[in-house]
Image (cartoon, rainbow, N blue to C red; front, side, top):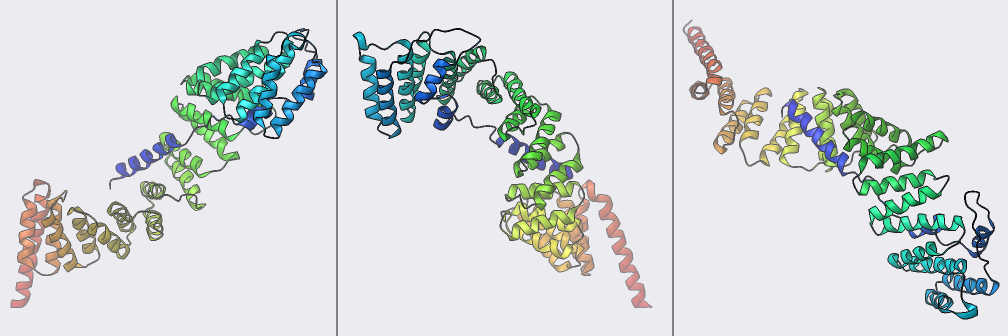
Length: 449
């Protein structure tokens, strides 16, 4: 295989690897909704009611004791997993009228707990409706509205309603004074899903920057999203620097492999080899495609012995599939490393698994290098008879040499003559015939003398 094809194979496989790696899984779990901004215990609700907010003055109605007790009863049932009882209690409170009618703040707490129950049943649409009912209530504590709006945005994302989630989150940003890094990442995820990569990148960059300013290590998924977005924008340098940061904090095989590819894009061949080799020496490369890529990179760097060792180890361990192409790569590597005794058995396996004559022609050439002339003749004749030899003229030249070394001069002459019919080998064929004639004449003179 030519060096160009070796480089192309390595870069193509690693590019596929880079694109195949999952960027980020947008999942908002029950625990995240509940713990971040979901249903709050009643004691917390009362604290929200009493807390003053300097941005807006709201006169929140009081939470009456009898309503509090009913809410506590429903909450206890929910925590005991008796969701049906909890739902009946809450619905009864909503249906009450007259003197028992609920004020806006009491209703907000009822809907808040209803949303929690619906989410626990994985009824995301029901949870969303309940949280929206919370927001509709006038004069609820500002903190309660802010928290609920964030949860609404998360629930849109859970249901893959990306644009609605983005819009809801932007409303939340307008209301909050101190959005945290996680909020910017959530917004970035939404923009990523609607393929607005510029806005996605701006938001995830902001989240990463916020963590760095505080001396904290940004989360792996954040770097991963940024890396993918830089790659999509064809910003090779930023992709490389992001991967280098990832490897500082999260040294994993996939990032070494991806970094190797990106160094290749930058034409930094030695760095490309070093990144892949770092993963290899740590036994991170466990797939056949990864190991063959490592071998191609060694061959490209003119280190055929290491390429051969990678292939030999992988084939013996069956990590590399024992198909013709892989045995051929191993054979070529051993041959380039001048390890003819090891190249022969590898190429024998490659030829035996191929349905074309090309590999038998190559095998014949290696036999000739190893002074195994009769085996060279057998392999070359088999290859030429089978067909599919890329350069039959070259194969005939090698066949002629093998016959010549076996002192079968008539067969050698026929092989050289056949090679000479192709203008690409005509000159060399004639030189061999002339050399053979002079050798025969010399032998004749020696016999006469």
